[in-house]
Image 1 (cartoon, rainbow, N blue to C red):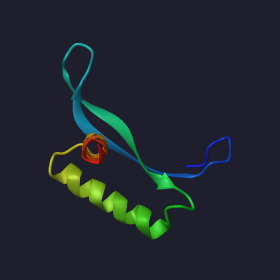
Image 2 (tube, helix red, strand yellow):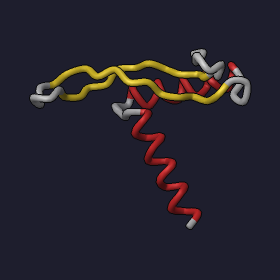
Image 3 (cartoon, rainbow, N blue to C red):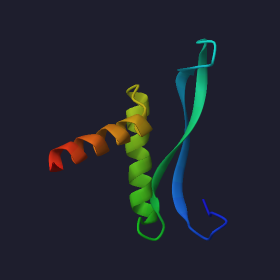
Image 4 (cartoon, rainbow, N blue to C red):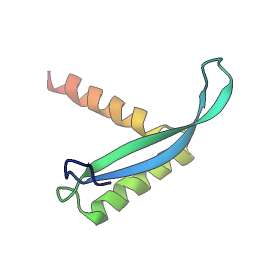
Length: 78
């Protein structure tokens, strides 16, 4: 994805099961950031995408998993 400011990002769109405002089941579309180009190469972005797809197959939301991993890393440092 190329941003209007000129930044380039690797992103992945995906859908997970969720709920709407009335708590009815619904498929929710989300986006997962895989990194900035050129810091993350095409090969690395594809590997990250494949890892995220494996999580989806196992019923895990990759964005939530990424947030959990960041929180755990932050707690481990302190």
